[in-house]
Figure (cartoon, rainbow, N blue to C red):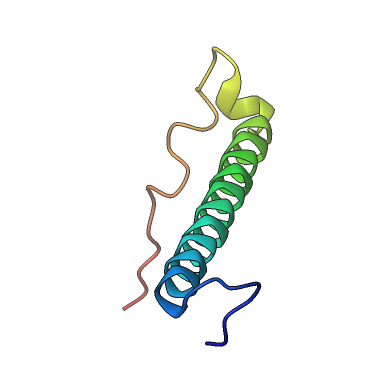
Length: 69
């Protein structure tokens, strides 16, 4: 890596590593925010029957299997 304004190669290497780590950290933070937003949106879209107090009509959904022999 060439030197810039008298900065030595080891210093440039260190600066490059710090810059890369900073970019990776920023990407992780953004990905985390996106995941939290996705989870929040998924939690909002609950069906009214599942969120209401009466589960008489939804308790047995998916419990019956029709088998024809």
